[in-house]
Amino acid sequence: MHLLYALTLLLLTALTTAKDFKCPGDDVVNTGGCLDRKDCLYAHPDTCKKYIRCVPVDKKDPRKAVPSYNDCPEGTSWDDATKTCLEGKECH
Image (tube, rainbow, N blue to C red; front, side, top):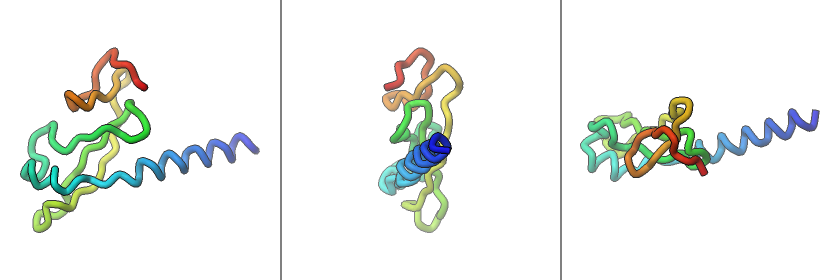
């Protein structure tokens, strides 16, 4: 029972941290609405096994974007410098 409670608490903490991510409106505007495949991509705040893609949601207000949480493929980790998931990259 205590294990279930601890796992639930851990999951809620992780979701809260990632959920608090706000897409930088300036990046959405400066990239013309995240048009290039490497635009508006960010490191996940909790793990390098995931990354965040900001998706514009309002053409009238290009600053509005929502985060989309994505997993790196098995055996890879997010590299923010190249904006891709790389094989053999150490995950800290």
